[in-house]
Length: 177
Image (tube, rainbow, N blue to C red):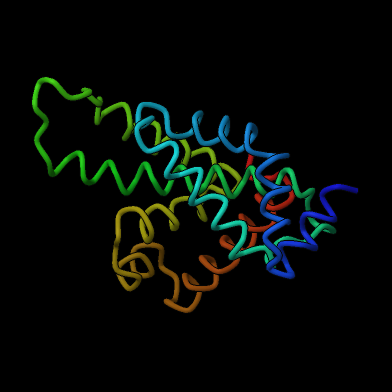
């Protein structure tokens, strides 16, 4: 019952809805962000704030027929934390640290990100997974993939589209887990 009130108030852009959300779900969102940020704990508060902002901005994307509100906000928090990993991992790689600063193992962060992506892609067939990796991760040209797979370009685009839809349905259904 309380979730419906929170959603309704946020959809109306009523500040009370955000206050209810924070009071009710701050510990849960904090734990999800903390878990997925790993060693980037210095960005935890910023990521949590951005998660609440993303919920506020994207509340229309929540559909109670497809998922519970709790699972939906966990998915938002998880993917916001993954975005932070990507964003700040790039900054870490291009900056130098003084010995007095916290050391962050770039390789560990890369492994964590790759593991998260691999978990998501495991929902796809072997062929879909290969095409996704080549196109989205390795940034290969669609024509090269089509030629190598002996498929038309439109067929590759169709497989990518169907794969995205499949992942979207699965991730919304399972709350991003």
